[in-house]
View 1: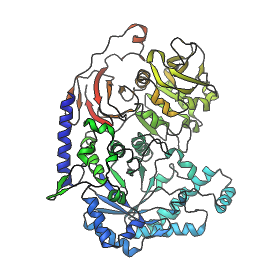
View 2: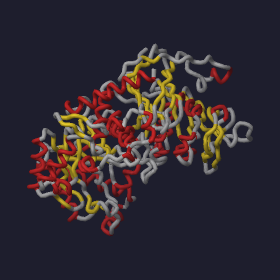
View 3: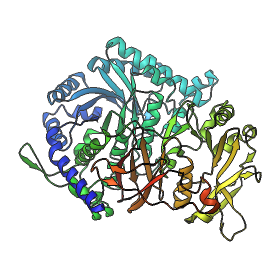
View 4: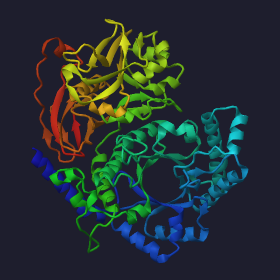
Length: 635
């Protein structure tokens, strides 16, 4: 079966590689790029303009290009901008504008100071200049403020607000008064788009106002760069998908697309390809490949070929991507990362059109909230599909609440309402610590500063390392441990809840223990993760069994994508919470037969947390390292 799947996939990839260059477009989304102001200025030189275009256009299909007018206190002369715009229009591309409101990006991303009238006027003039040239323009990441100069300090003190409150008000007003309104006064047709970066959990501290700005900007854009998860931002792979979904829920129908740069490509071509692929799995309508000069100048090197590529059965295949191809009767040898983007996006395009609307476990993150920052991305990496919302969601069977939910003063009353309707509420230990006293009206639990070192999960196996968790205390026979851990637990003398449950009215409340280092979630044994996934699968209707760093992306038309982010092949069991006859590969149409499930054994087999649900159907699949598969099923 595996050989058949590999051969079929190889045929599809070969067809894509040979035909997509001729097709020149994509079926389900647009692909764009962005040129920085300093590079636009260099394009006054015809030779530079034509050579870079030849390099880029021969290796990746593009639909649109964004030309930046301003960055780092430099504005491109109008004559040059007009020339470059005309050139790209002649190549059949859509052309939009861009602005980066920085004074010195190399100096800790120095932004404009919005408490200074002269700098406010500069921002206004740049917006007017750009609107005169383009019918749409996008603000790059930097429409925030990171300054605490004397003028900002004085303005903040006059406001009587905290830094976060001051900056949120300052930037929400600046966007309307200095960017959108002046631009539309010059060009009533112009669409002004704000692009938000990838560090969404920290936005409010620097003035990005997700509550107000999307209501008056014509659209927003999403930074989906995850690069190296071990680098400064510590953003997990799953964020490239999850942040798109979160912003879709903030501004339905107005999230224009994702934005990926070359960061992480030094790890391997796969890391770059994964970011592009995950962005498009969120069903976004466009992606910007940041930036044009990276597409032209970041060279393909042997170091971009990861060790797992030697197996030859990966979804993203380095050897095929760098192989010569024919275009316009000429043989072209790929030279830059643009070729990686081309093959990855055409390959993903074949799958995306078969997927419905993304769904997942609803997680409530109120506007401007903090706590357990970016945790949902770690949970996505252990196979819990996330669906983050800035407002409380009624009508779901289960809702996940992290420490962020403590921002809502009515959170306990909303928890009660969910439970009274017969729904589940899943809270993390971070939220428990934040609202312990209020939550006591529902369940009396305690989670303070006490810690435990664990490595043994008893029935569910052992972790490969020891790690630290917070201790959850509860009343015996009032709450029940579903998954426990100790050091050791089997044959030991103490244990601590990993997943705890209690009942209230018609519903059930769970407490999910989050390790001090979120990355230790990946160390939970497979069988412990399986129980957690099973318990939290009601709204999705399916879950996976297997190790961590396997993500599930479900859709409302009974399709899904299962993706392996491990450096080695894995065997994964896909469990559908219903009786289905088969599971089909969406690309090859191969039909997978159900696995034989064991009969319930004893008390634990009859307990719904430890055994398969009645009528459930399971399918076993094998995924190569850093690979994915699209699957569909029907009753």
